[in-house]
Amino acid sequence: MKTKIDTQTLLGSNELNLLNTALIGLALWHLDGQLMVLNPAFAQILGRTVSETLRLNYWNDIVVEENLAAEQAALRALKIGERYGPVEKEYRHKDGYHVPVRLSALIMEIKGESYAWAYVENITKEKWQAIELQQAKQQAEKAHCAKNQFLVNMSPELRAAIDTIIGYTELSEAEIHRAEKAQLLYYIKNIHAATLNLQSLIDTILDVSKIEAGKMQLYLEQFDLRTMLQNVISTISPLAENKANALRLLFDDDLGDMYTDLSKVRQILLNLLSNASKFTDQGIISLEVRRKKEKDGDWVSFYIDDNGIGMTNEEKNQLFEVFTKEDAIPRNHCNIGLGMAISKKFTQMLGGTIEVKSEFGKGSHFTLRLPVTISSDKQPHISKVPRVSADVGIGGVVLVIDDDEYTRMLIELYLGKIGYQVVLASNGTEGLKKAEQLRPDVIILDVIMPGMDGWQVLSKLKADSNLAHIPVIMLTMIEDHEMGYSLGAAEYLTKPITRNELLNVLCKYCKDKPSFSIMLVDDDRITRGIIARVLEGAGWHIIEAENAKMALQLLENLQPNLILSDLRMLEMDGFEFIKRLHQNKTWASIPMVVLTAKDLTAEEHMWLNNNVDKVLQKGAYTSSELLTELRQLMVCNID
Image 1 (cartoon, one colour):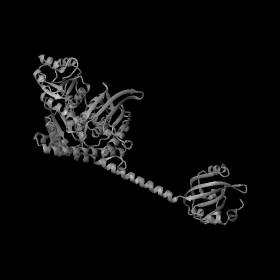
Image 2: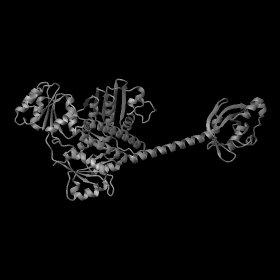
Image 3: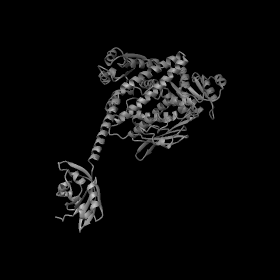
Image 4: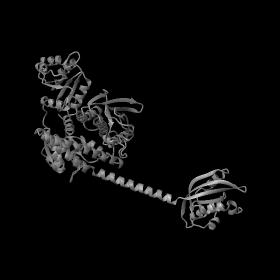
């Protein structure tokens, strides 16, 4: 037992007064645990008086510690004047519970013995606040997850409502255009544009919610990269044309296939290109696509450049964030944040990277890198949809003779997407040879070419009895129609050409294809009516079935060329309907397309890919894009 230290002698009256009035616990104990000096604040932590506490042993009676020997050894290893802590530990309260404390100590020597002079804080309130904060955080996360789950569950209803508005505005726009009501057409176009913006915003919010709720999945399939790019360019071209922007395209010759999530790659590119178009006026937007073999496999790099308004460093740093503080992004950029955040998340899900370089007032440069084949534990699943035949097109065969690579590629993108079979020739000699071989339905011919110009090619075409009947559309940069018409040209288009101009001219000359019948199965009367009007407008015969049971009854007496069905139906859903079709050999041979607003699981998506020819998401396609998908599918099934 150590000699008791006289507190009055050790400290003096002033120091003793400070000791007794201090709000923090103070204590002096021998390293063996015998308490020598302490203040009321220290005793209060233990629920005791000073005299009661002095009878306790620090190690045996106060400290709650699993490994006391280790802590004692650590203290003894310290030299005089060295400090220990701060450390957090627990003390035993007189009533039996544990009190969390934070302790710091100074090793000192008194009469040749080593002591610890410690000051101790009661951190019970701090710990409770931390617990309350953690609970509040968990509750907030739970509420956030509930909100996301609600949005995920509501997504089919939200999309169905907006799809109905879009469908009717598209139908109204077409009818008003035919009626030549210019002012009404202006109104409906504005309604249509605003609704499309609303749809884009809703889809983006739903995508964010699905990602945060852990519901976003990858749907892997093998697809032709160039065909996907044609689809993207055709979709984005009207937006570029509206801002008087030129598209510059540079693709590797052999881009080949990719095995990844087609819809997500497409959405990333659409986001990047649409933003480039929105923030560029009368400029150039370029898309360069390169495929390269690297050590870790094949990669595809997409380079998107524009010479628009660009971004500041602060805008670049916050570009891919889902939420930013108010006014962090200027008003002219405020509608791109969520879309770019989604693009970043999709890129990460696909195992790729996305980077941006930009200078305010001088434009932006995005680099998107994606693996050609995504890493997956699942066995590769290849979409059942067959490729479009190389020798047939729903809109006919078009031969393009032009020495300008960009023009050839642009026309191929415009026409290939909607079912025309496009054949390219880079000079007059090659063009005449292909015309002899293919006997195309229409020839698009540039006037100004080196070597043999367009006039010479046109003369040779009209001099050949086997080719003279083929309509020739001349591409020119100057108004010189008299010579062309005198040589037998059918039409003129002045460069730069637009998609609408090109399609309007081709509709006059390309041969008609056989009429097709489509069975439309959907228990939503409004949605069914909109889709039926769109399909009838394309010249197809529509057989409507208000549910799956009615469709099976109708199939007993007729066989359509294609079945287009919803999944979410009462009585019998789309999955059961598909199973019934496969039980009948005749019905199973009919091409089947699913058009749904349902958020499919990976398992459902894989099952559908193995049992139908195409799965399309409602709201993800415009009317023209839906028609294109159906045309290409029916082309593949022509006997």
